[in-house]
Amino acid sequence: MKKTILAALGGVALAFAAPGFGQAIPLDPGDYWDVTEVTVDDGHGAEYADFLASQWKPNQEFAKSKGWIKGYHVFENSYKRANEPDLYLVVVYDRVPTAAESKAREKEFDAYMQKDSRRRDAESGVRAKYRHIGGTSMLRELIFTR
Image (cartoon, rainbow, N blue to C red; front, side, top):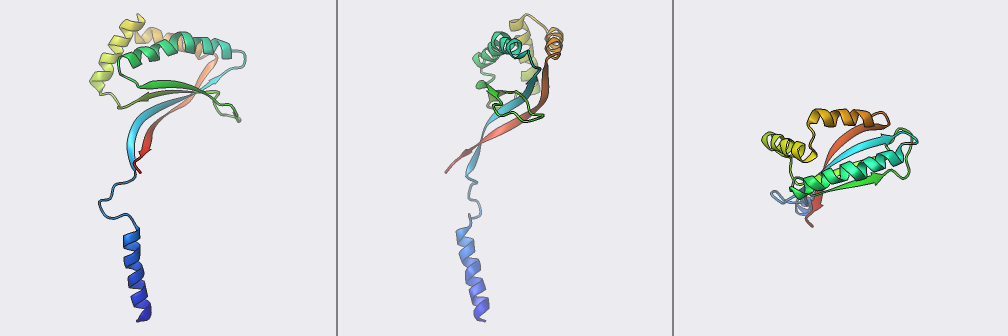
């Protein structure tokens, strides 16, 4: 009987110690971070850095000026291990665009670039001789609420 009472009291204490029903999780959804893994062949680091500075960055600045993205980053993998990328290209935005928004953005981007998607694809193919995309991830930041 004594054990049953202790077990019941323990259960009641646990109920009050754990977050209650309806209590919010202490994390709110934040921005999306698209992360692209990039490996650059030896001897082409400066060439790819030139591309990033002369084309990728202005394109991101254009997207930022339109409110399509909130920011962008280039991260170097300083302690690269075998089979890891050299760089991570990150683009931050607050929401995923709808299909209609994506189509409208592509038209506006084509006009800005004065190129269509076929030409941009061909130019990417030229870079693919020394730049290799290992993968992409979409991460979502979680922000502590307490």
